Amino acid sequence: MNTRIDSNQKIIPYLWFPGQAEEAANFYVATFSAIGGSGNGGGQSTVGHIARYGEAASEVSGIPEGTAMTIEFQLAGQDFIALNGGPEFSFTPAISFFVSCKTAAQVDQLWQVFSEGGETLMPLDAYPFSEKFGWLNDKFGVSWQLVVAPSSQPIIPFLMFVGEQHGKAEEAINFYTSLFDNAGITSLQRYGPGQGEPEGTLMPSQFKLAGQDFMAMDSALEHNFTFTEATSFFVNCESQDEVDELWKKFTAEGEEGPCGWLKDRYGVSWQIIPTVLMEMLSDEDAARAERVAQAMLQMKKINVAELEAAYNN
Picture 1 (cartoon, rainbow, N blue to C red):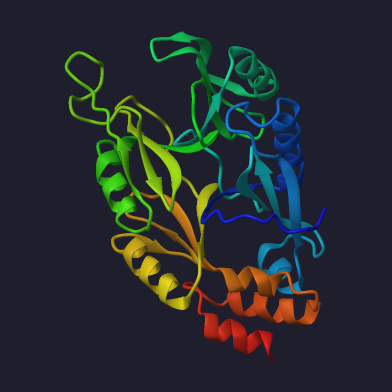
Picture 2 (picture 1 turned 45 degrees about the vertical axis):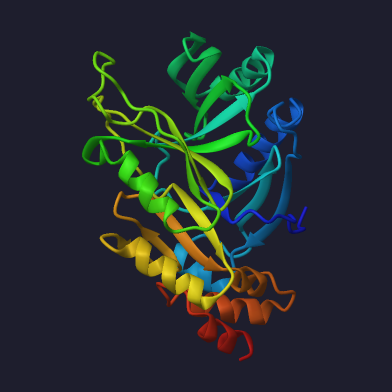
């Protein structure tokens, strides 16, 4: 399939795979389709537009021209993008996806598929907060939390602040919610005395960005991982002004990267991308799209005027 998915989702999880993006997207779509989304909130699961490496991107990446570069897909009605990249980055449980299911049977179905070739982080069992819950990495390394729980958004990105970032979850939530419209804190849950974590740090807590649910928590346990570029958040921006504003705020105490990528002050990766860029890159005129790609590869923060000049030659 090579059609764009019609969606108004502003922030899209973006997953970097070492050459397995198309396989992974098809695997996830088939898995969620088999149980009817997540069983909680509906929504289709489908593969959408596939963009391929052109000459310029191929030269930079070393990936053969014509190879699938990005695959847009939906799971339970929610947008994701998969990238075929190199082996530079690995997924870690610092960012996982919290999947709310209506029934324990649906949790069992997902667990059975995701656990094959994967790694268990918390065994599938009954816990005080749910009749059935489990946390695991799938065979591609992507981390999932599966739970029986009501939710209007079946799949929620979940950020865990560990190591040097431990204790900063609440600060990060306040920072992120200050950047977007239709944003705010849904619930903050703190550890109390005797709960095995420093008192006052965050238990799993929920917030909204651009109308979308996110979760975050602190963990003082010794972990050998943190945030990596393997999972980033792709932000659709309507104008150069919005790109400029978000770029300035996200990179304050953060780190600029190429092609609209950045790391914020907590090490979380974001892509600040004007919607016009994706329209240009998917233009039917391959020469135009290639000129835009070449221009983009020279940029850190995306400059719309320069993209338009390249597009119009």
